[in-house]
Amino acid sequence: MESQESGDVTSIGATTSIGDWASCAADPGYRAAVLDLLGALAYGELSAFERLAEDAKFAPGLVDKAALARMASAEFQHYQQLHDRLAEVGADPTEVMTPFVEPLEAFHRLTAPSDWLEGLVKAYVGDAIATDFYREVAVRLDDDTRDLVLKVMADTGHAEFAVERVRQAIEEDPRVGGRLALWGRRLMGEALSQAQRVVAERDALSNLLVGGSGVKGFDLVEVGKMFTRITEAHTRRMAALGLAS
Amino acid sequence: MESQESGDVTSIGATTSIGDWASCAADPGYRAAVLDLLGALAYGELSAFERLAEDAKFAPGLVDKAALARMASAEFQHYQQLHDRLAEVGADPTEVMTPFVEPLEAFHRLTAPSDWLEGLVKAYVGDAIATDFYREVAVRLDDDTRDLVLKVMADTGHAEFAVERVRQAIEEDPRVGGRLALWGRRLMGEALSQAQRVVAERDALSNLLVGGSGVKGFDLVEVGKMFTRITEAHTRRMAALGLAS
Image (cartoon, rainbow over all chains, first blue to last red; front, top):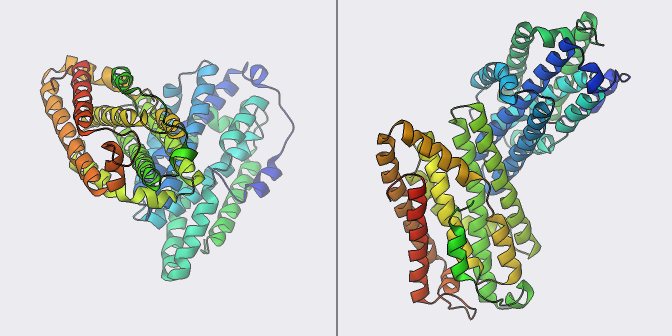
């Protein structure tokens, strides 16, 4: 997962340390919220692995196939780090991931790419939105969790690859741009809709987001600003692809 | 790729060194044969990545899904090592892999698993046969190539995982054993048939196997013995799964 625009987004959210995991996790509400967050992130990585591996099958050649397999493999390494961290803090990784399986699978069902280019745009845009969101949240977490989240959100080279391939396709056939622009809007809509569903169902997580669990969370104005920043970053990314958002 | 039985098989084929890559590759026939071998192996790993990632989708739970994703990721790392080695010796990895795409894809088309257990048996048996074959050949190659081949053929934990899952399924429903035994025979048949096709089409490779390129290859009697050993190892593996071969 990665984002070319993330530099702009995370710098706005930078805050001071709230302490390390050991001190923060003494609060059961905080602990539950972070386990939720890591569970969602871990299943997201496993799911990204599957999606990229699936896209690799439709790659137009061996070089593209291997490039997608490389990214899928990188996502799996991220999953492994999150899995190991969950086990390390005494959580059952499967149990923690389970609540997020259905919302993520629903997102993928509703946004199944019909070809190679739609798959590339989805991976690029979807991962970038997720990266922006997690980085916004990460800067408000304890030092240990923040470092882990920022590490697994590091660039896997996906963005550059997708941008190059999509721009080239639009250059060869400008009509492709119109179709992919619509696709990008649909992706953003479904992502927001599933994110809302998760926040509505997971009290600990939403408390963390709106600052209700005693730690330095977001207030509602800040949540609004965060979504504005994520949406603006999405717009810039679509433009980088040569698409109107 | 791995084999539980490989200890038996490779020990038989142990021979003395024929020198390093630099000295052996001065012979263009030897160089072409090794590039063929590494090309087949590299595409085999990429293809194993795809197949395992595909099987992960049908895993009955998150733990199994992650286990298959982990193995897929390990196969990709092997692919990467082979790719880098091909580039290092001045070959074009894509060009070298291309002749093996169609035979491997034909094998996968003809042996598409219809469920999770068939997928497990295929991955286990197919990888083991490939591992036995490459290890038999590896001991006759120059030191550098041999070390690389043995390294990428190292155990990825797949065998143990598959054996455990398949035995458990047969214990729960013994009828499953009959179906999977037939499946195992079909896999062995198709693997031999595609291997023959590759050897028939690739002169350099078959010269290496039957000792026609001036290096220490197999003679025809040895090729026969090698196939006997591989078939025997297959029989033992099927027995380990609780299946008659």
